Image (cartoon, rainbow, N blue to C red; front, side, top):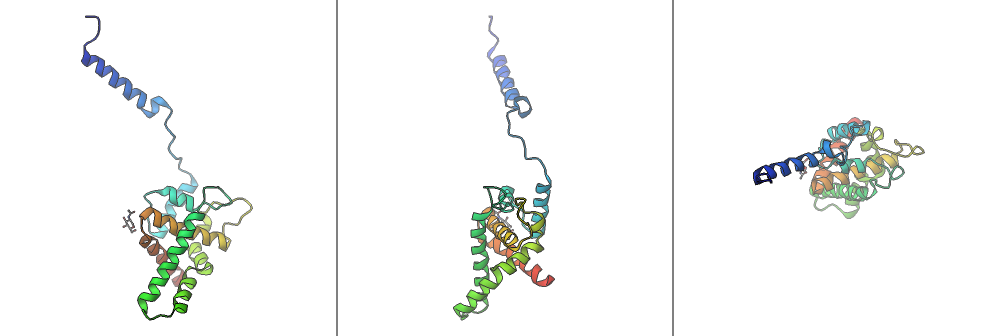
Length: 180
Ligand SMILES: *[C@@H]1O[C@H](CO)[C@@H](O)[C@H](O)[C@H]1NC(C)=O
C-alpha cells in the first residue's frame, strides 16, 4: 500500500484549500477600504441625519461632486429632488385636501428649492464632507444643495422607499427652521 488512506488524502486536500483560500496566504483578496478622514466624516454625517446606511457606498457617492469624480451623486440628486418635492406636496395636501395647485406647487418649491435645500445641507455639515475638485468651493449653495439632494436620493435607494428620504428631509428641514 504505497498510497495514503483516503481520509488522510481528503484531510490534506482540505488543509491545502484552507491555506490557499485564506486571505493572508493568497494576498489576492481586495484590500478592505482603509479608514480615512472621509470615511470618518461619512460616519459622523449619518449620525447627524439620523439614518444609518446599509450600503455606505451610496453615501460616499452622494458626497462626491461631479467635479471630483465620474462616480458622483448627480443621478441620486434627481431622485432626491423628486422625493423632497413629493414629501412637501404630500404634506400640503394632507393639511388641506382642497389646496389649490398653486399652493401645493409653492409648498414644494419653498421646501425643496435651492435656498432651503442649501440651508438644510449646510446645517447637516455637508460643506465639510462633500468632495469637490480644487477649483470648486464646497460651501457654494449649488454644491451643498446638490449634495443634500444626492443624500436624500441615496437614502431612498438604500432604504428601498422614499419614506425614509422624506423623514431625513423633514428632520433637516425642521432643524433649519428652528435654527433660523
Ligand atoms: C428604512 O429606514 C427606516 C427608518 O430609518 C429603518 O427603520 C429601516 O430599517 C430601513 N430599512 C432598510 C431596508 O434599510
